[in-house]
Image 1 (spheres, chains in turn orange, cyan):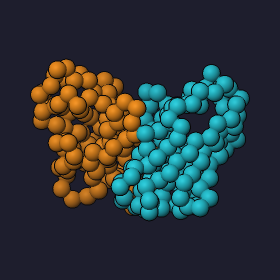
Image 2 (cartoon, each protein chain N blue to C red):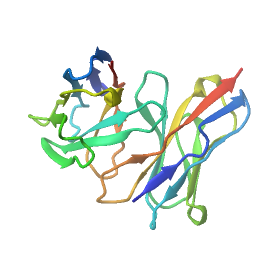
Image 3 (cartoon, rainbow over the protein chains, first blue to last red):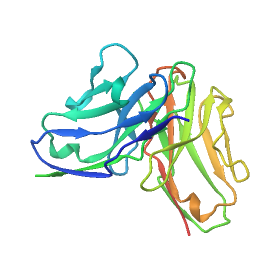
Image 4 (spheres, one colour):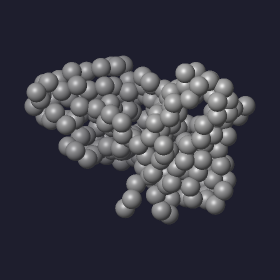
Length: 114
Length: 114
């Protein structure tokens, strides 16, 4: 069965510092990969997705993610964090075309120090 | 465009009582999902509809949970009777179709079972 691991439960960074949130997946083939963000009391918002092609994908709010097949990873990055980025971030995996179920990781909570 | 609407935002019930949640997806979205998000975990798919038909309900506890989408638009999720472990946020999401379309989430209903 496919699974998603986000090894960091909570990360704290200073405003203006760079950020990398880790995500590893377990599946034989290349799945569809997503990053979502959830602010307190809100639903999830899609930041970016990877289906195929260029392994570096750009998303909204200045985020990017890089797919590394050899490491089964899809880490999320941002060069300079803003206080408004404080939220919970979820990596998600779908097996591919024809598969409907989206499997989420447990999330990484990001705190930003002003 | 209007987002996914959910109600109520909060609900507190005693165990063994019943409860219902309502979701109105984005207009034109054929696919509707109900997710359960327990505190500290990522969302877990409960059921997926394509128009008014069920695509995947493999993780729905059918002895107590039921969902319907009678006219292929809005949907209700019911729990009867509720257990303490049902305390969670119930998220509704919709997408244009069930392939590569991104999911749009509502703000969720937070259920507390006492």
